[in-house]
Amino acid sequence: MEQPTEEQHRGEEGAVRPVSRHWSLALLAVSAALLLALVARVEFLVDDAFITLRYARNWVELGTPVFNAFELAPGGQPVEGFSNLLWTALLAALYWAGAPFPEFLGPLQLSLAIGVLILQLRFVLSELRLGKAGEFASVALIATSAPFVAWSTGGMETTLFTLLLTAYSLGLLRRDLESRPDLSRLALTAAAVSAVRVEGLLWVIGAALAVLVAELLLSGEGARALGRHRRRLQWVAAAVGAALAAQLLWRQGIFDQWLPNTVAAKTGGGAAVLGRGLRQVGSWALVCLTPLLALGLALPALRHGHPRARVAAGASLFVAAGFLAYNVLVGGDWMPFFRFLAPCTPALALLAAVGIDAVPRGLGAAVALGFTAAQPLPLFDVHLAPEPARSALRFRSFKGGYRSEAERVEVARQNEGNFTLLGKALAAKTRPGEVLAFGPIGSPGWFAPALDFVDRNGLVTPAVARREVASGGTAGHEKRVPHAWFLDHGSPAPNLLYAAWLPGAIREDQPEQMRKLKRYFRGQGQTSRPEERPLLEGTRLRLHPLETSALEGPKGPARDFSELTLILFERTDQDSARSFWGQ
Image (cartoon, rainbow, N blue to C red; front, side):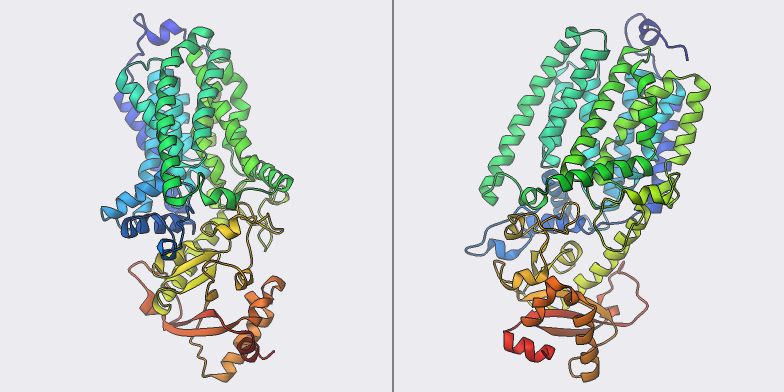
């Protein structure tokens, strides 16, 4: 495809030619419609999203962002069990304003995702002026990317992080950004990036380096291009420095820590973590087509005839490489559809769009349309890579063998329903001041607001977070402890060591049902695992039959049974435990 010269592109005065309003609106409408249709297919909420929701609610209702009320009691210490300060603060503000949660999470995330499309489209149309195939690809490849679609729902801060990082990166790539309002917006966006995730400062620095290196290598202007960035980076440094200082002082004043407790809970593991991260990157490349497309088009993109397009492609390539390195170093993530890699989708789409513009016109249009159609296939559990190749890169340590990402979404939906029902049952049948040892604390914690928790995964429990990495952990949860660990640990010591529910009514005054239940937990249930056997020496069962209809809210999980039994492992002395379990 013949490339336009700089003069043809910008005209005599150096200004970009106006773009058809109808074309830009059509691009936005088509890409937004694709995104909305695909999100409706994959919509889910992951349990961890409810952890942030509970922190946000307690921030409003208790005045401090804590997970447990006992953290504010005399002798207690608040724990920062979240890594997404800006997202938590935003949810707290919306909760204070009366937004209905968790229902409001879906519209909020979708609006942020559409914001990403708007940012990318405005930049491409105003700064690059690619051909129509490239312009279409720049947003259609975002809207149909399986990770981006999946994490335009899910309830996590991923969409906000993607929006802010995209706005910051594209702001740095703008050729003309000298006015005070523009510089202020860029600086505030950088400060927001530094606050949206605990490692946000690294992304502020990394994106700046990506743009500067691309300018130096690909703009043809050398040092003059770098000089153009000096003033904007001074503004960024001032805003980010102030934001970082405020975060540190706030964190130290409330939590008596310089970093969130989640940093300790999720770090460690050495070579095993790196290996898991590498396998996840390989799985991402096989399942999602965007990285392979971007890699195949990288060379023509970097050789594009227009310098600004070359710089944009180079910066996008470096940003994507930063995400790959980060994912490997932290060992990836257990959630569906590669959450840590989803935010690099706009960068990959921009790189691919420039490459599409650099190849012959007919080929570029075919590639843009073909990949737009093929990218969503994993959302429907359809794959070009055979299952043996995908399962060979299994990076999760979950039991039950390999499951596709679409199957993982279905598991997340099932868990949301099960844990929601458990949380509502706990709210109905536990007493204020009781403390439960549990792992998935999100949904139960949200729906049982008066119940306190100690966390097997250590996110809100420093005693677990400070342990050495245990064997048999999973991505992000290498320090997980068994429920029985809390028989001898925990501050405060939990009086409830495990919770579950079973369909049907089971009562303690029904000997045959009790014998079957005890047999189940001794041979098949939670306490059949060797690490959990000590529970049989320090607990007894507390049963609460409940009518399912009493637990259903307006959007409660539909069940095909009318009764269930909440089962609690309640702490007791050793003699009582042995008598109860028949040991």
